[in-house]
Length: 120
Length: 107
Image: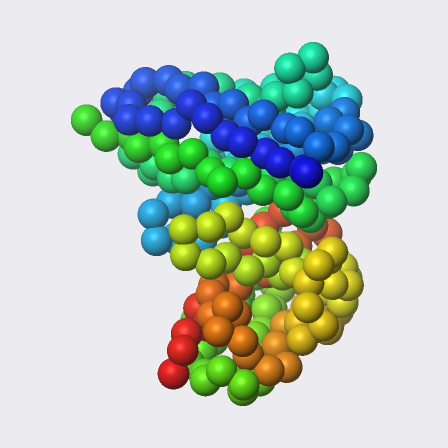
C-alpha cells in the first residue's frame, strides 16, 4: 500500500527552527517528484516546496525561499523540510505529497499532515 | 503567479441533488487543472486531473470539464460523503497554485 507519514511538527517560538520528515512506502521513491503543501488553520492549501525525483532540482514558494530547505534521502526513503527563521504565519498543517507522474504534476498521494505552531 | 478563483464560496445542497463548482484562472492554464476533495480532519484527495480525467478509484458521479481559464467540477447526484471542501489546482505555470476552495454543505 502506498503511504506517506509525516513527523516532526510541534510548537516553536518565532525565529526558531524545526525539521519535518516524511516516510514514504509502497512506491519507487526515486521515480517521483515530491512536495510539501501547507494549510493554515481554517484556510486553503498553499504549495511550499518541491524536489525532483533525482533530487537535482528544488523549488520554493516566495514566502519561504531562503528560510526553508527541502531534501530527500533515498536509503531511508524520506522527504525532509528544514525550516529556519520561523514566523507566526508559518503556523499550519504541513503535508507531504507525491506527484502523480514522474514529471511535475498533480498530487495523488498525501500524508496525514503534521502541525507546526509558531508562537511565543 | 496564476490566481485561481473558485465559486461559489459555499454551496448548500441536499443529498441526491447535482452540484456544479467553478474555477476560473487569471490566465490560461490549458487543460492543466486538477480538483481535490478535503473532508474535515483529512488530507486532500485527488479527484480529477488534466481537467477531465478521474483519478484512480473516484466514482463516476464526479466529472470535470473546461480548458483555458474556465473549469467546472460536476457531481451528478450527491452522496452524504461528498459534503466537503473542494479545491482546484493548476500545474501549467510555476509555482503551482490552488483556489481558495468551495465548501459543499448539506442544506
